[in-house]
Structures are given as structure tokens and as C-alpha cells.
Length: 166
Image (tube, rainbow, N blue to C red):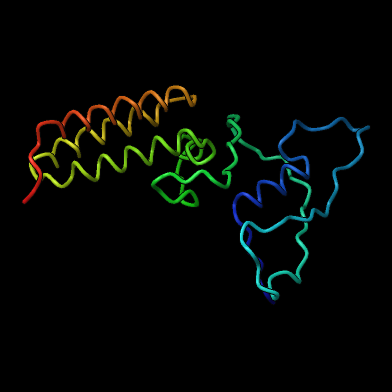
């Protein structure tokens, strides 16, 4: 038996097309389609294209508290980290938002330059931990963008007046 793997974005598209991203329909509503054709995110080999992808109707989850819907991970958003390993809602938000992904890339670039100075590493580590805590406490993209702007500016200020390595 051969396994077919989907990217997270393709899986989310399947769920959305199957109606899993909407509130439960009334009993009179027609059922959601059960077979969905998904275009792979990367070109598939001929062996990978032979198995159809089917979506099963979602079973209602039994949870003690409601959870916020996760933003989809979109192609083209390339932050400094691997979006397939996004560990929380804020990281998924960064993967889904091109502006946040660019802010993350810029911070990573400035941060890497600052790490060239050994005497800055402890400040970078401690400040980075504080930044991650503040960033992960954000509930919206504007807050995340502000945290990135503030920490990037702080790292740039650390770099000011530093002499290049010989």
C-alpha cells in the first residue's frame, strides 16, 4: 500500500473545499462534496499522481474550549524558519502573511550580522527571548509587525558603533 502525502497548504485547501472551515450547516443544507481535486504545491512524480485525494466529512471535535481558526500557510511567504514546523498561531500567522514573513527575514538578516560580535551575543540571546515572548502574546498581525519593528530597531542600535571584524 502506497502512502500519498500532501503539503499542509493542500490539506487546508481540501478541508476548506469540503466545508470544514465553516459553521455546521443546517440539516436541510446539501452535503459537502466528498472528493476534491488538489493541485500539488510542487510538481509530482508520475507515481504520486495516480492516487486520488478524498476528503472525509469532518467529525465534530469534542473540546472543552473553542479554538481560534488557524490561518492558512500560503505559498510565497518565506520567513526565516520552516513553516511546516510552525509551532503556534503567531508562527502560522507569519507564514500566512507576506509582510510579516518579510519582517522576519529582515530581523534574521540584522540578527545574524549582530552575532558576528561575540560581546553582543548575550544581549541578543536575552533580548531575543523577550521578543519571542512579546511576539507570541500578540493576537493580530499589527501587533506582530510592531514587535518585529521594535526588536529589529533594537538590534540595529546594538550594531551602531561596532567596528567590523578584521
